[in-house]
Length: 128
Image (cartoon, rainbow, N blue to C red; front, side, top):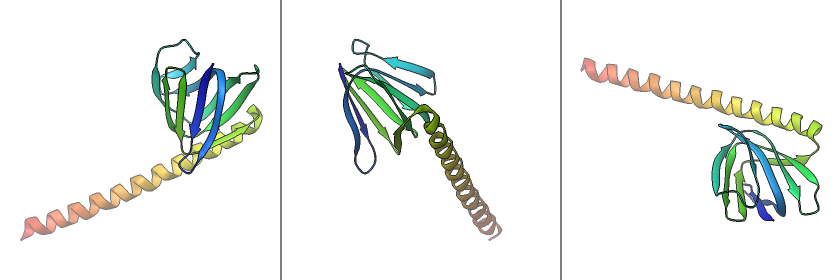
């Protein structure tokens, strides 16, 4: 058995003994079992599943984050996690993706404004 801990920015979301954890990172899907080597990956928004000590498979929708397996500890740090059934979680994952897209647009807009300001000041400076 492994100890799965999921940490949100404000509190601990989950701490459970598990036999297996499956998720998805930039390199694709992964599956971790107790005897696997230590592992670290960035998590993509999607479903993280685990098998409990009682043998039940449970599901979480997780936002972007980081997963680290060290020995029999699996630690996940993510902005948001929601437990539920697979069908329900699809809606949550769509929300996470849309929020991520919106944040990305805002960041791009802020960077574009900074670039325009820099160019204006540079041109003013070069004319002096």
